[in-house]
Amino acid sequence: MFNYTFQWKQALARLPQMLDGALVTMQIAVLSMVIGILLAILLTMFRLSGIRVLSAVSKTWVEIARNTPALFQIYMAHFGLGSFGIHLSPFASILLGITFNNAGYLTENFRGALKAIPDTQARAARSLGFGQGGAFRYVVLPQMLRIAFLPMTNQMVWAILMTSLGVTVGMNTDLYGVTQDLNALTFRTFELFALAAVIFYLITKTITLGARLIATRLFRY
Image (cartoon, rainbow, N blue to C red; front, side):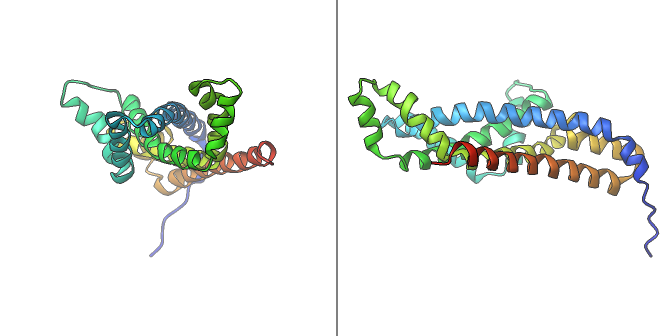
């Protein structure tokens, strides 16, 4: 009944290729987080600006990002924009889709973090001679990022895992895409994907533990 013969040597021989794919996975995740954080800060400012149009843009972005599947967002970046003559590479499509998702979730995290900061912080900064922009940049923003640090870590982990969806738009240079191609060549499905799962686990676990260590050392008070 169970006559499958494991051939781990074949899978381990492909490990260097898979690690190269893991580097691409990390590249996508890091870029999507950096751009996503910048966009989220901007969208948070839009949301709190009191200007209806800007607030509506922020709310719409957040609603779409949080209430539609990540796969849909990647499909729209690749196939949806393609319908209008805007053709993106698989790398650009997956990066755009994940960045859109990150920005939506992080905007809500940042908005919640801002609500946790007393209004007196900004008023105190203004009394010391800071303008509205300076008070936000030097006083409020650092506290907001501190409060949202661990949720940002969770989003980073989610971004890494979302890169596996790139295979649906032809992405074959990331960890999941490389594993898929190697599986088509060797037919060692269990071994290859088990190894890929271990690599994903080690990456995400390292990021989680590293973030907790950083938070413990930097945010003691």
